[in-house]
Length: 163
Image (cartoon, rainbow, N blue to C red; front, side, top):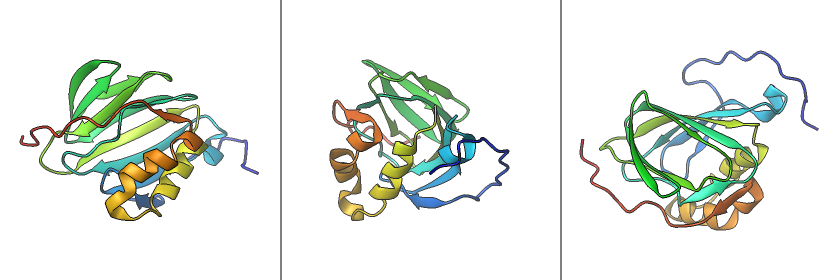
C-alpha cells in the first residue's frame, strides 16, 4: 500500500527514475503519488521534433505543463496555441488537449498532475515496455483508459519543425 503521508522532496537535475517516453526521449519522475501523499505527480520529459500525443483528456486530474526548452504547439479544446520556453499551460480535467514539439530539436517539459496520478505513472512505466516503433500508438490504444485518459482524436498533424 502506498504511503499516504507527504514528505519533503529535494531532487537534483538529472536525478529520478527515468523511463522511455512514447513521444521520443526520456521521462524522469521528480515526485510520485506515494511521496506526496496523493497531492501531485511530477515528471520532466523530452519530446522529439514533431512528436506529441493524440488528442485526449484526463478524467480525474488537472494537468500543468511548463516548457523548459523548445517550442510546442498546443490544442486546448478547439483552439491552437504556441508555447516557447518559459510558457505555462494549465489544463483542467475533462478538457480535450494535445501538444506537439514544433521545434527542430528535443523539447524539455515539466508536467504536473494534481491530484497525483498513479495511473499516469503506471501508463509511462508500462508504455516503456512496448516496442519503440509502435510505442506511441499502442500505449494510447491499450493503456490510456487504465490511466484515466480518454483518447478523443488524432495527434496534431506534423508541422513545420524549423525554428
